[in-house]
Image (cartoon, rainbow, N blue to C red; front, side):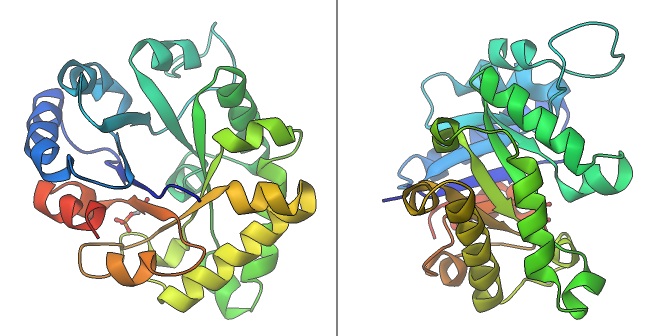
Length: 248
Ligand code: PGA
């Protein structure tokens, strides 16, 4: 059985003191969760987050990583730094990074490889934009993104990989994919993993949904056969709302 995972992607929100406050508000509300609970503050707030997460069931994630170990890469953050900050998961290839920061399928793949080499667990984001859905090529798009992101990743490493299916038109818009749409596309992604690796690997890999998921629609989405969790943006910035998702 796949253990569901609800991860909060805080994006470029919260200062260090607000990070501490939000985690302290969330902690008592999510401590009974049956799923894995992850929060992903900005890199500059990870130290503050770590300071209040000892002994908590909330795990720490980062929003990005660089694919080199160290060196002259101004502004980037290395895997070793994340590890020392207590980070276990790292979001890679979020559509905002693809859209605004020139993230490509190639850099996504390099980052996934680096994360796995360092024993950080990547949350690999894939998803179509609106015109691609309207053109009927959603499956082709996510299949290609999945194959490129996982190129060169061994079957053995797949147990550390989480995939997040995030239709770009549903992110931050209040428009959620229907549970059936999300499940269908996630099944395609799972099928792609089966083709690359094996049916067993596909059955094991966790695939989240993301895009305007909140306390009101989490239960319906989570009831679907292939949806193993959520990557939550806006609704992860309020403790009560995030807890509703976590306790779907
Ligand atoms: P949203 O963001 O929940 O605000 O739509 C999800 C995401 O971008 O991961």
